[in-house]
View 1: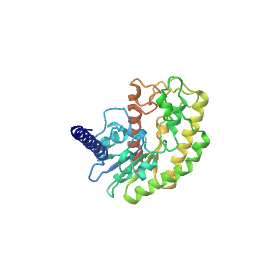
View 2: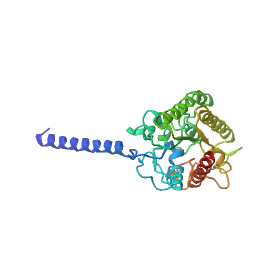
View 3: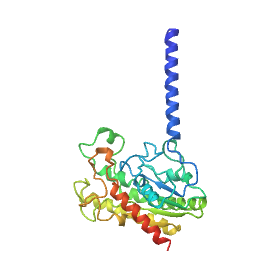
View 4: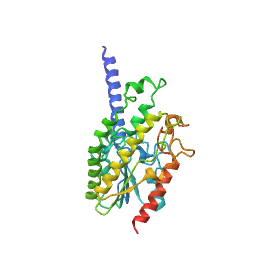
Length: 293
């Protein structure tokens, strides 16, 4: 290789290295919790983040898909609260307690001694709740890449049940750690909104009746574990499943997207719509008003 070619190669490599370093720094810094004393901290997975509901929330990393109209943002505007929303699509209890996705800090690091309210929607990804529902809907049209990445692997009910006990322990640990960091804060677990009809299935859901029945059982077990964690560790529970009942994917007025939303993948399949998030925000407002009386 000539000296000129070597110099070009070095400059090219150096430029790529700088570009990669800048990208890493951007990902590391993007979405850092706002400095200050947040009255309200919202944590959780995509059912808290609200992907594709409206425009992205301020300081939301692109991979978190956090919406400015998720239930936390709507509720904070209703109450005039300062909010730090660290919810993120794909999050598990690990990402709340130990460290967030792609170099983000643990979500719980947003909680300070001045925090007055913490809401938490988590647990579905720990047991592959939505992942299983999506995998069950795989068919001949499902891309090779999705299959190759394991997106069509269905976990058995037995495999899921093995994860429920550690999930209960980790939900309790989250509540306890919030209380340690913010002794005066109200802690509210917000469970997952209703996706499945009370019986049967439909084309929008993309599951057989047998698959839908299995997923209803999984959803109920997830709700039971969330309730047990709240009760056992002195937290409040907002029952979003009950609040959104009758507005499942198959309902005449659904508050959740079907498997193939009108916006395509940008519509967040089998996730809450704006109407669902608004119902939860209003429910939270009424629930906390009643809890103070």
